Image (tube, rainbow, N blue to C red; front, side):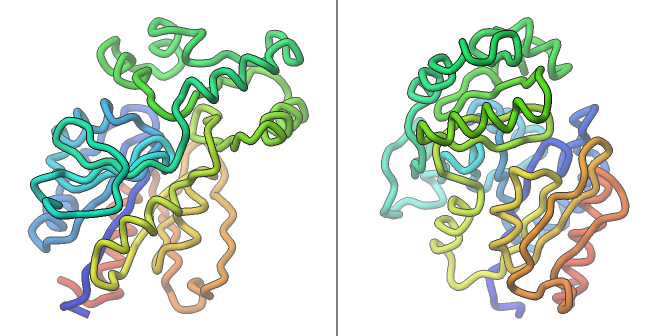
Length: 277
């Protein structure tokens, strides 16, 4: 097992980052340990490219990452100089795209808005001030969150039944709606699992751990060798399809603590399972 590549794919908000404070500090020592072991920690999140550039500096991460719920994989050129199969490049990154641009999904949401008057608001409509209010982010962070390339976040204000109708209409138009920790994310049929599997093929038959706390993490959690469900202080645990019987084998992990504390707890269990000190 020591010669097998190990990859950790992780959601950010509510998982590696505290749901309320966005702090990663309870997981800092674990992140440092993983870096020393040479185990990549790959963000797989609804966050944007711009947000992740800043966040990776904060947590000391230089690995590849996946943005906007699996819409795009970003590979650092200095780590992947001869990689093939990407679709574009952006600054110092090769980009593999799985989703149409944001403008396409904005048009779809706008087209059904008359059917749901006053029942939702989008990032585009709300603007920076509203994003700050909805998320608790400062202005700089809110601008990074608004800089989306592939999908449109929606703040739902109506009933649960009307939300189902809203999602059904968008589905008929070819969109997929994923529920994150705070927002619905309207985009294409890309997901965190698809992007994770594509990136994993660049390694030599790796063992994968996926960590998440919400329903938009299910595709990623379902397809990893090990799944870590981090306890959320606000949402029920995502319901997984354990087709790999990972619960019986101990490869399906549920943390007792929330956020980064639970993340560190679950990663420790993963390393112990593989007898990695």
